[in-house]
Length: 233
Length: 138
Image 1 (cartoon, helix red, strand yellow):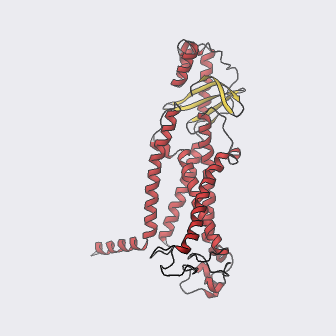
Image 2 (tube, each protein chain N blue to C red):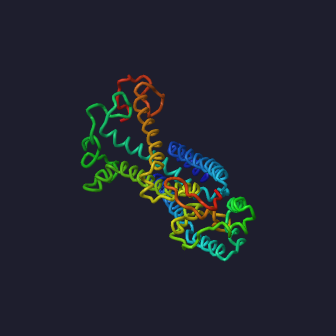
Image 3 (cartoon, rainbow over the protein chains, first blue to last red):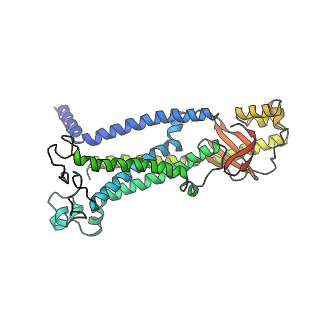
């Protein structure tokens, strides 16, 4: 009896958190795959340079692996940070994720259900006054922006180590961190990630005007007119 | 915030902390040990102990000395005229590579299973181009 209740709870947990769990599993699988492929590529380069191979665990704790991971993380969090911020102030007529033209801005307390307009089941921080409410009102942007900055900083720290290791392998002088963050290597790695994220977000905003995916919250209803804006807002 | 959200946030934070720690750990392999290897190498060459000096070179560097000198590594390394008068300067180590300044030049080392080995020494800078080295195992 007790085990069937536990099984029911587990199934309900899986059903209620499917989206997060699905992407968490994909993330782990991709990260593990990246570590094996990255290790093989790293060792190939070392062999070509007349250096000894390194073990798998040494690779996954290396600056080379850390840079490759962090440079992708920072760009993903930047993408969401900008999208969250831009959808406050900019609109795209026909996009299901956009507010309607004329609605740009932080909205009124009534629309945002804060202060005296909060519902009984609203988070307590939405009812609170002062700094607590201000911080909660922007908590998503603050957290996404903070993770972006931390990931970007981690990329620069791991990046200078990885870059300098390659410099030394090529019998060239190492860079300081300050010189590295102004270098073409750092900005090439950074901008090649940024451009792909911006393209994907821009494409999504534009394509979702005319294209549909039945049942997805990222799409308008199949029969909704192309001009309908803000289906999901 | 739900406990599930807290857990997800905690895992993300831990992962980011791990990356940062990894970055910092990779910053500080034992650079002093690399400098010590260069000192021992210099002392061996100055003392005419070619075998001890060659033990501190990578295999490609040993082959390079043998080819250059036309003799074996042990006899060749002491006759190359390496300028090793200056003591090692502040060493820098990154991942599996190390850089040890020697006067106006430098030595380059690589991590082996049981410590650092000299990959190139007697190296002088060439502007933006790679250093030009008397012993070059690259």
